[in-house]
Length: 124
Image (cartoon, rainbow, N blue to C red; front, side, top):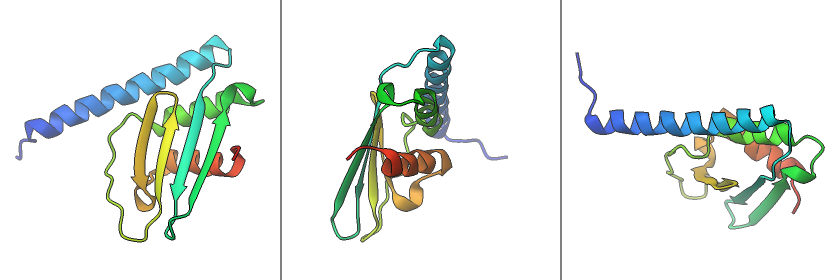
């Protein structure tokens, strides 16, 4: 039976704590029934070096709870692998104080869903 390295256990514990804090933040905001201002920004740097930035201000949206839930599910505070390949688009995602970077192939589903929504519906 293999024993996990201490570093991997500490990293898993830190990631679990970050995920819990983000979920608690999303649940508290939804339970309060009030729209708190969260600014979500996605910047995409394409293969050709083009830069596309879109921003969503949740307080000015008719559906702020949806955006706050998307940001909470994306768990931006978690450390993700950042290993872009040459010519691969990269993303810089920020929601409030939380931010992350990811290569296109490393966008997991909740984060990919947030990126797609902000790029489609956000302001330029």
